[in-house]
Image (tube, rainbow, N blue to C red; front, side, top):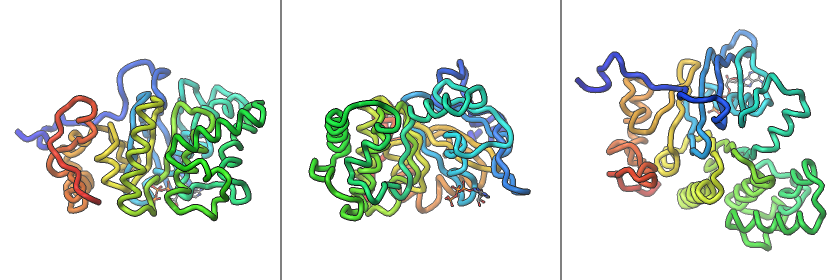
Length: 291
Ligand SMILES: Nc1ncnc2c1ncn2[C@@H]1O[C@H](COP(=O)(O)OP(=O)(O)OP(=O)(O)O)[C@@H](O)[C@H]1O
């Protein structure tokens, strides 16, 4: 019997273990705006050190989920644990300290236009630490190099940067406080195929060298194939999580269309599943076609 015919076939959204050990652990999340219910009893565990891609149709609540995890959107119901800390147990000040352990890269880069790149990177340091100016300058230079920008980019204003450079500068700012987890909202949107592939590799190499957890909302199937350990799919107001190979076996029509449709085949999904698994020691049987 094919796995997809198996009535027992299920994709877990939660994992066994102590919830405090996860980077993110969510139970029973409900988000609604007026009469519109966006999430309805959503559960999700994100392992420390993994790269998790979040996908789903337009309006399924990917951005709302990120905002809720970060405490920027207050859920109607549910229990959210971020880096082992329960949101509802903490006061505003304590929660801000948890937020400071997270880096966020917004789709547009969201840099302050009136500040140079170095000043943008230093802004979170000024807010959350009492480092002296020299040390902040040195740390900003380090982050600039870490994301593959030339040191000279530090003195430039966002308007003087290309789209790809802005993304890298935004990533450098997200790394400002040496976060344990980074949230990326559509990191490769607006980049050309080569720039997007380069950015994927940058994220992957940062994850490997820093051990940071990466949570990435994306519509980019190539990114999913190239760098994600697991994928979370927002569907029917809940979430299904698995490796690419597991999700490809999910019989739900949306999953079949998404993971077996023409765009998926173009991204090399149809043949196998998991190129990232190759990096984790499992054999991969796919090539990476150009975007
Ligand atoms: N502050 C808000 N007030 C009212 N409705 C909201 C608010 N924020 C989000 N929504 C609604 O919640 C739904 C989910 O929005 P969200 O931006 O999370 O979707 P998404 O999955 O990120 O979509 P896309 O892929 O198109 O960016 C949408 O219908 C949106 O209009």
